[in-house]
Length: 386
Image (tube, rainbow, N blue to C red; front, top):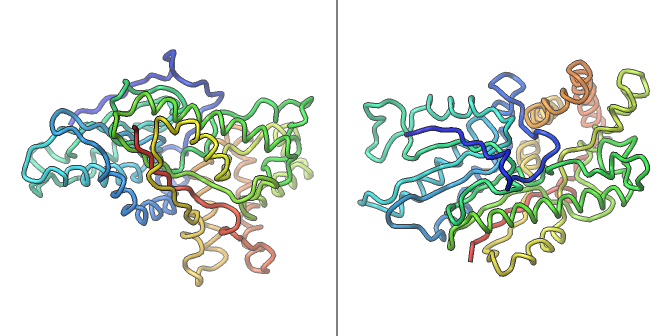
């Protein structure tokens, strides 16, 4: 099948973004490809729900069925997800040729598309007849990479039949300007997280999250075909204020503050760094959805345990060292490049070392208790285009 890379990031319809959000690139030890097992496990458990959504999609009997994975990252997770989607759709056309299939893998322009497509075509995928075929490893769909921001238009009008976005919509398009403005009541100086921040700071993040989700749904409203479906999976928290998403995340701020107090990290570096992720409350999500009630039908809305909860704590026999290692692996895979670009490689390595030690100590002496069910969860949201 044909592979191409389409860039529409500079187009007039793309949403502005003041930084390149990307997972750690490549296939190395710190890469997202090697450090995203919790996400893979979670999506594996979510397959029955995803199949229910796919079965609702209105599909053309001929022509092309178009599927998009928004925020696909790199590694094998996105490929496995898309393979499952296409196989489920193909099962609706038994004994017939059916339509052709076009898959778009979308992520920011800084994402490692090279590794993604190397993985896509270096691993055999059986065709409908059960063989690899004379042409070598194949997949039963055309694949294309689409660099750009999913907070703006990326695809032609009424072209998408199924959209999947997993673990991406809690990444904001930008840091709110007010939290970096020392003259603003929302200034977040002295903090890298939000659990000790003022309500003005949380309000600023909430407003940015509202704008982003609105932009996302507005773009998809134009791009999706009638009867098309979306499955969105993103972070959720319980209460609005104070902002609580878990003790292990809150611990990160303490480590950065320790490094500042020891003169190993400049205060201005800490003060200008803010978490790139914002977990909405269900009320915040519902407020945005209500504005699109004439465009989308909410088919299902399930609140589930965080992937961190199911992956890290499903085995009570796991040692403190094992749990700490898994937490560090998620951070390096999802945000290692971002931390290094802001603090530098040496400071980032020192932070990760200190953080690992603090995690192990906290787990061993029971002073660090991760109450994930009452802090962060994930929302699994299924929408149909009216």
